[in-house]
Amino acid sequence: MTFLRRVVVDNFQSHEHTELELGSGLNVIVGPSDYGKSALVRALRWLFYNEPKGANFIRVGARICRVLVELDDGTKISRLRDTRGKNRYLLQRPGEEEQPFEGFGGEIPLEIILASGIRKVLIDERNKVELNFGAQLEAPFLLAENGAIRAKVIGQLGGVHILDWAQKSVGTELRRLREEENQCSFKLQDLQEALHAYDHLPELEERIKRLGAAISRAEAIAGTIEALRELQSQWNELGTALERTQRVIAKLEFLEHAENQLQALESLAQDYRSLLTLNVELKGTEGHLGRVQEIIEKTGSVPAAEVYIEKI
Image (cartoon, rainbow, N blue to C red; front, side):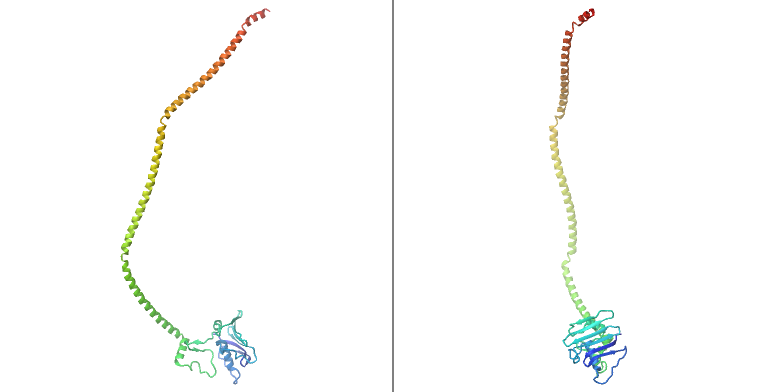
């Protein structure tokens, strides 16, 4: 449980500078009247509750006041207010940098409340109870309140208000769920009546299945017809090509006879070429024979000459 270990008050009402070291148990502040005991409580209320508001509590002659508390875990919370209206909180946790809070509009910053754990307990929309501070001559805790307020506070402290809230929430939720159930029942009835208009859907679904099968068969037949048309087109093209081929073959029926004639002509040509060669050779032989006869004629007196030479 967190408790205040040290309190420092500067320039708050009658306190110019006051420091208090507090223990973890009961702390009692005693002294003569008008020595600032109530001012210490007001300083703490100003720090934690923002009460009193304004700047009238700043010590006369001072320009700024400050209230600082240090918790048992080392956390320091302070509030400063000057005569020019500057108002801010400072929060410093052990090992962390100091966090300033300004412009909070009269509401205690949530970080300050969470760090201190001090706040007023909300009883209902109109009532709040202070659990941490009590004013001078104030009656003991809750004894000045009526029975209803005490019951609410004790209920909140014990968590009964959560059960009340849960009970109310459950009742509200049950009523809402019953209304939704009734609405759903009406909607279900309307839907059931509306569904009668779709009683033919199973038959329609069966017909759709049959139509789907028929469409599949029709698509298969259409594919077969398309293939047959393609084959027919190829057949027609082949028939046309066959007719052209037959006409060409008919025109080439004399080819064998022409080939025989060509072979005969080639044989005759070869014979002709042989005769031409023989003719050329014959003419050459005849010319050579003429020259030989001419030589013979010229050499006819050779034997007589030989005899004459022998005699000589």
